[in-house]
Image (cartoon, rainbow, N blue to C red; front, top):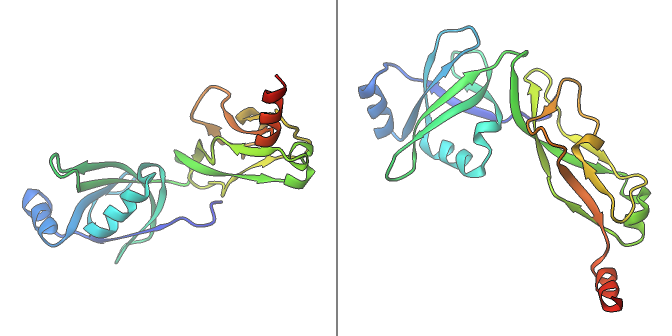
Length: 199
C-alpha cells in the first residue's frame, strides 16, 4: 500500500450552476464536482492557490488523493479533468472521481534500486543510468504499491534493465505494452574516452 496518499482539502459548495461557480471564483476558490463510487455527485470548492500549487507539481491527473471535505467521510479520488481559462490558462473547474478499493487506475509508481554493492559493473566504476525514475502502472486503488524494486545484484557494465526484468506487485501492469528500458549500467566516462582513444 502506498505509504503516503496526499490529502486534498476542499469544502462543500452550496448552490450549483454558473452563478454559484462565479461566486466561488470571486471568493478565490475553484469550483469542482466529485462523482462516481455509487454515490450522488458532490459540489465542492477548493482554494485557488492550493490547487494551482498542486497542478504545478505535476502528475495531478495521475495522483491518488485522499479528499477531505468537512461533514463528509474521507474518500479516495483521482482527478479526471481540469478546465482552464482559455486566455490565462488558470484552473476554473475540477472534476474528481471517487474510487472504490477495487477500481483500477493508472498511477506513476517510483522505482527503487537495491543491492548496488552486489553489482560487479558498479564495483568496477560503472554508472547506473536511470532512464525512468517512475513507471506508470495500472493498479487497484486498494492495493497501490509504494514503489517497485529493481535488484542490481550481478549486473555488469553494458547490462540493460527492462520492465520485464522487474517483479511487479500482484495485479499491477504497465500502461505501455512494449518492453521499455528502466535503467542501464554504463561504463565510466574515463573508460569510454580511453576506449575511444584506442580506436
